Image (cartoon, rainbow, N blue to C red; front, side):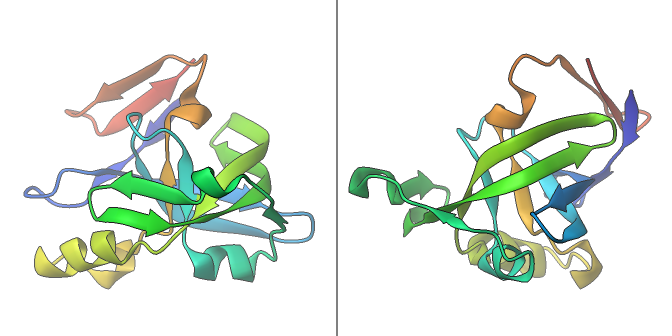
Length: 143
């Protein structure tokens, strides 16, 4: 399987892909950042609300996340399916949090609002898969 990707910009070389996200009743094609170093997958509150995803109860100590923007409060939802081309994961726990830091970086770098990111695909999506990134052809493959 081979998937085309875009880089956010030359100065902000984040890999952007189109991902299909499904809830029990809705689906949506969204732009996601590939971040295999992220310990989870993340989406915006607007996306979770639009897809009417149910929240998951988690212990209090799991309600804070540490990242590039510092410590943020999060909640979790369950996505029925996340698909990147033919690679898919079902019933995945996804963190919901403010992604303003990323959106602000895009704005500072002059990246078009058309490249609005609503999700981060982290390590759990890629678990037990081999990911190859070809920057020359701007394609990635998953096995």
